[in-house]
Image 1 (spheres, rainbow, N blue to C red):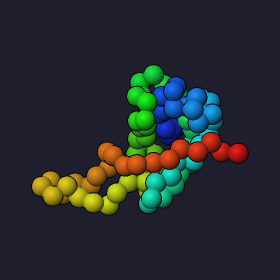
Image 2 (cartoon, rainbow, N blue to C red):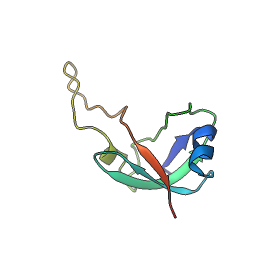
Image 3 (cartoon, rainbow, N blue to C red):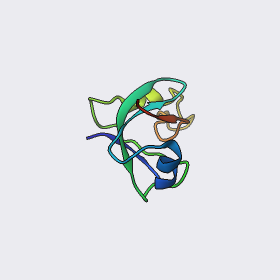
Image 4 (cartoon, rainbow, N blue to C red):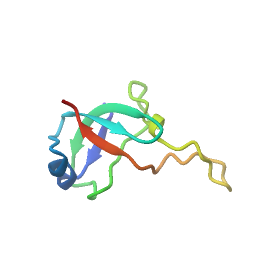
Length: 85
């Protein structure tokens, strides 16, 4: 199951508990997913995979291409995580 991995510090500051549904937004789109609170994530850094059909993570990413390899910039984008009411 898709989830967004966030640090315990970020989760605490946002009032998010492990397993809660959150809204993840970027300038390009938004998705709803579960929060996975983990020490593996550094403060200010979140991780989502892009392998699940039910949550289209790439809606959040930039359409720009690397000038040399011509591959999409799927690995980094600015997001905001919001606790669902």
